[in-house]
Length: 204
Length: 242
Image (cartoon, rainbow over all chains, first blue to last red; front, side):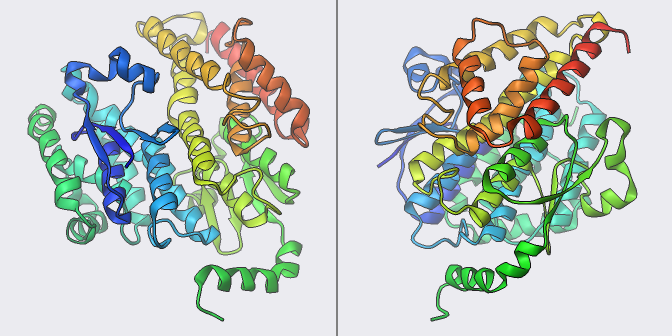
C-alpha cells in the first residue's frame, strides 16, 4: 500500500485522495501539519527536499506534484481508463486541464487568497478579478467530471468566491459533489476546514 | 472486433494516416518562449512537420481578436490538429509523442518512469520557471525592489533542487536517454543560462545542457537561437531603465 503524506486543507492533496477513491486504491495516510511546519522537519526533507504535500511513496518510487501523482495512480491502479483516457486527443484535453489548474486557475487563487489568509495582507481586488477571469475560461471549457478541478474549485467556494458569476462551474461543482466517488470523505471536510479560516479573512 | 475504444481510434488513425500525414499541424508560437521551444524540440525528435505561425507576444499579437477566437487564454504555444485546438505546452508535447511517436522512448509507458517525468513537467511550470520570472521582475531597469532578496532566495532554492534532480542520471528523469522531461526543461533552463542566471558552480546543470545540445535533433533551430534571443532581451530588461 503506498504511503501518502498529506494535509487535509490542501487542494492538491484532496485531488490525489479523490483520484485514489475513484480508481479504488487504498493509501496509507500520513498527516503533515503544515501550520506546525512538519513538512520542513529533517525526516520529511529526507523524503522530499522540496517539502511539498502531497508526497507519495510506492515501493521504490518516491514522488510529488499532485497532478503527476493523480495520473500515476490512475495509470498504475485503474482497472479501466475512464478516469484518464488513453485516446491521445481525449488525454490531451485532460492534461490541458491539469496544467490549466496548476499554472493558471489554482495559481491565481493562491496569489489572491494565500497572502490574505496566511500572511494577514489585505485582499487585492485586481487579483480577485484575475481569478474570475480564469474561472470564466473554466466556465467556457467545462465538460464532465474532474478530480483535480473539483478539489480546487470547491476550495474557492469554501473561501467565499462567488461561483454564481459562472453558471456552468456552479452546476458542474454541484454534480461533482454527488457523483465523484468518496467526495464526502476525500474532499468535503478539507474544503470546509479551509473555508472556516479563509472565508472570514477574505471577506474583510 | 470494435470492442475497445483505443483499438477503434488506432484503426481510424491508421486508415486516415495518409491524409493526416499530408496535413501538417498548425503551431502558433513565439521563438523566445521556452514553452514554444519545448514543442519545437519534440516535433523535431518525432519528425513531425509543423506549419509555423508566429505570434509576437512582445507586441501583444496574442490579444488580436482572431487569436482570441482560437485561444481565449491568449497564450503560446497553441496547436491545431484538425478538430483539436490545444494549448498548455506540456500537454502538447505529450500529445505529439503519444500520437506520432514510433515508440515510447520519449515518454515511456511504464507508470513509474512516466510519473517521474510528469513530476518534472509540473516542476517546470509551477516552480522553476515562475521563480525565475518573479526574480527577473524584482530587478527591472537596474533597480532592485523590496522583494528582491526574497525572490533571489526562492530562485536559487529552485535551482538547487534542479541541480539535485540532475544528479540522478544522464537525463532529467534519471534516464540514460532523452525524454520529454528534457525537452520541456532545457528551453527553460537555457533561457535562465543565456540571461546569466546560472552560476558556473551548477556543474550538473551545465553538463546536462551540453548533453541535450549534443543529443537533441534540430537543437539549434528549435531552441538554441530562441534561448539566446530571450537571454539578450532579459539582460536588457534588467540593466536599462524601461
